[in-house]
Image 1 (cartoon, one colour):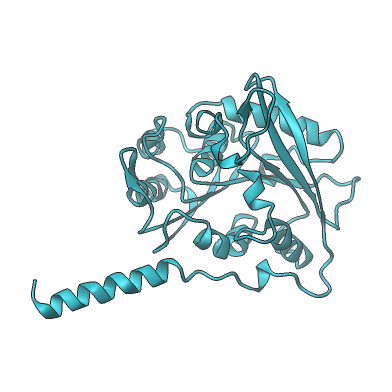
Image 2 (spheres, one colour):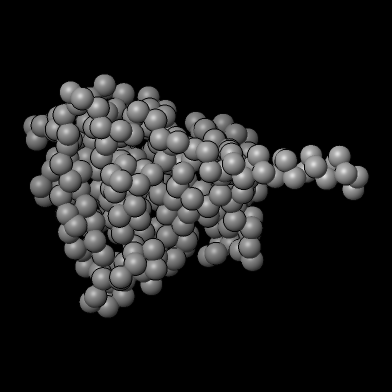
Length: 285
């Protein structure tokens, strides 16, 4: 490689590294004067029967505009501790407050659920909950059944949740991203709106088959927002950027209502958090 070509390569790499860290939160992710604030309940604790001998925490966001006489839309977030945190990248309660106030999304109950830990004690680090990969990366309907048959009915004892699948969304990142897609794929009668950030559509537990499944199976009535970046993971389980590009190509081929935002970020929440308000507007349009 000549000196000029080497210099161009170095500059391109430096530019890419800057771009990967250059995603900033916009005003929709900040508290705004005059916007009513919803409340967050929790953390609450749930012991599952579907995932036996596991314990987990979850939180519930209730918008200021909630009226018990009217069924509210509902959105479930995997790795809930991350999405409910108003100091980090996603800040869902703040984003919900702003978008609901401007009627850019419906009045929506948020459910933020962590993966399960085997035994009686909660994990010190929710990212390392020992049942996380089993729940999130596995194909099939078990995690969907956990949500539909256990957690939503529990929240529904207190709040009026819409039974309309078009009023139900689900979101997650990494393994939580593929889990969110799996729930809608398996149960479009319950969930029809998906956001996947840096989704792990790789061979951790067989998720690499989704592009082929999408191309060959009957089209589901679901809407899918995908986000990934060119600096995402590449390891023994697969290449995350390529896997997400294959997902987007398969969804396009089959005529799904989908959107794919491909940037230069890595395996972080920075790009997904910056995009979240726009993703929610698109999802609920």
